[in-house]
Length: 324
Image 1: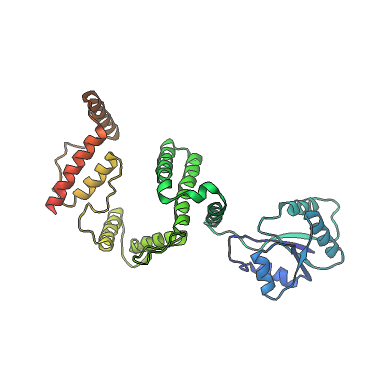
Image 2 (image 1 turned 120 degrees about the vertical axis):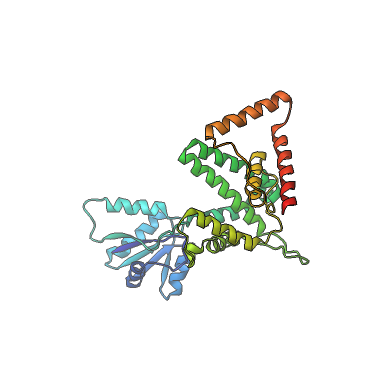
């Protein structure tokens, strides 16, 4: 009997299924590719089992397995982290062969990827690029800033098109920027006179996990929130307590495009200024047409609409600060 044990390199070494451990413990001989420093192999050896290193390629390894199985011994093979596709092709050919040999071959999944496991691959690939690629080695937070902005806009465009595959690709490009910045931050030299120091993608993930738990007490705590309005109110209350901001406008990035900046400032201003007198509700099409008309008028008058809106937002911000 030959049992080919597949394992995931994205889970802790030795974290195998009960069936996998039973197969290894019952095997009279366990084999693995020679020269492979597999954490799983090391974990199996550490448990007290003996693993034989088999030299050669897939053909030689398969011959070793067949020879041991033909002698009537129970054999197990630990597949390496690369998946050993050549050897698995030989296994598949054997399983499709007729008549079947006297010994059986079983492919056994010893461990499985958990959700998010491929993120580990991305971190490892980014680490290798940072060490071995001249271009990646030269990048800084500042040099990557334009790519972060570009990928954000491309992601928004993909959302607008409704193309799911395009969105998946663009989210991957955006995720790369996050991992890239985190990898650069790992190399930060700690400032002896300040608090700045290195941090990693785990710190990034850990920070947002803790924030989400804190701001969702209706999910992770005992707070009741039966509707969206209550959830949003709780979020803002908790956020205000955490940030301890001196102004409702504090924390708004001024580099936002003027229209997004205006929307953000108006949202915060509503907490301080009296509500504006609006002449009824407008449909999305009407808003778009009105904005386009204003831009057309600005162009005719030789006015930069982006800067004009920024100036108006700046005046509104001054009113907000005066009212606080």
